[in-house]
Length: 292
Length: 328
Ligand SMILES: Nc1ncnc2c1ncn2[C@@H]1O[C@H](COP(=O)(O)OP(=O)(O)OP(=O)(O)O)[C@@H](O)[C@H]1O
Ligand SMILES: [Mg+2]
Image (cartoon, rainbow over all chains, first blue to last red; front, side, top):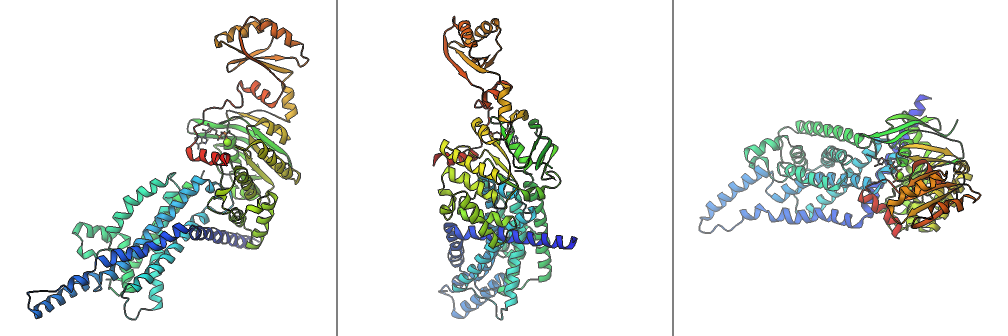
């Protein structure tokens, strides 16, 4: 009896979670303008960002007035140094993989804007008056974001590949799945946090201001766009605790084979941060859902 | 067991007591109206009854479930059409209703069947494929009600169901509400239109400053007002007191309502000449005589007209939500 009750309740919770997550997906797909912008962003970034910083082209500058043998030697030394820094001769490959992490960050923030909007249009009232558990409402927001991250990063990788992303030799399916999981773990923490904040604010501007305050510094103080070794010392310290660094380095380790000291420790750190953020975000969300 | 029973519901916001010890009972199949001006605490009462706000004190029981301790069970049995619009206007009417049904645990198949049923019931099936943003005010209000009916609630809360509608759409909505009553639903609605409360309700609670100041059938309430009331507005407001004194001198029951003096008269009409005589010396702006209405009851109880609301700064978004309905 009691067991059957628990099961039927669980069944209901999962069912509602499916319905609410489906709504998130539906809303994203139906808003054609938003969808179009959000799927063209990866393309835009890659074309603009990646290719305009191409270091390889610097290396192949004609070295006039230098003995050909010496020029070749310099080139080799430089190339070796670049590979050492970026794990690849190609900055494009470096930044394309880092971009996966940056996208996860921004999608997490954008996803949370929806929560504020739903409060403003009154839909949240309806949601909270229904028997849907608060945890399920919270979770559907996070899952919606994770879905968008999945689609966008698949697209990003596909476009990057067309533009010359060099994946490591012997890339396996499990590497790809693990790379996806890295984004999911990071996205879970970030979108939980942003969702939790969003449930407690009344204006989307607050979230945008937070994005400026948090997202940009977080992005530039991580190894997502530039290798840590190149940073000034104080920034390296920040990068060292920045979860984006760990996610970006793991992505590179898995996709392009740039070595990291201890992948397991990276995973552990990323998981720990993400779970902490999820708990904080969940508590904040419950607080924000207490009354409308 | 009464489907709705509130015991001393109180809501305090900071220093301000929005609802002050509201107790009420609604029998099965009854329509109960909370009638009151802006800021009376109607919405706050509904929020507490529908578990959206936690009572500061007191409790209420919906179908026997406590709104404080068994909120989830309460949410299952109630339907709520809040005062502000709540549908997602970027989605179609169909999507809104279908998703609402899914929220209550209906399978996709049942949700589709039920969505169709309620949309047809509220005459929205023809426009169900349209984005809600394209709906008229009346359609949006009907959609709100359709959404609150998907799970076949036994208790229905309608917070100002006709706010911002023209007379025709309002009457149309009354028809639906009467239909719900016939099907056995227990309904609590709020309004500040007295004709609405008069027309729809079995019982009315008059709410003022967070309290229910009078309660009864519309007839009972109206019988509280014996006879008719004359409202006399002197041209010069400075004459108010003198007019009042002149009438009192002739033994009338007199009180002030804003810039007017109100006089209680016998319904026989015999008092009128006497009143006219008393006020003859004064220059007057207007004299009106009204028959007993709920409005009269309200004025007697509160010294305030229903449409002379307390200040209520409306948040601009909420205002747009309401006006959007009116404009189309
Ligand atoms: N969250 C809140 N914080 C502070 N005060 C509030 C809050 N909600 C409502 N109030 C106040 O409580 C009082 C009652 O508000 P309520 O919305 O219940 O009135 P109402 O009878 O529904 O009025 P209306 O006819 O305008 O809808 C108002 O003075 C309002 O300003
Ligand atoms: Mg109200």
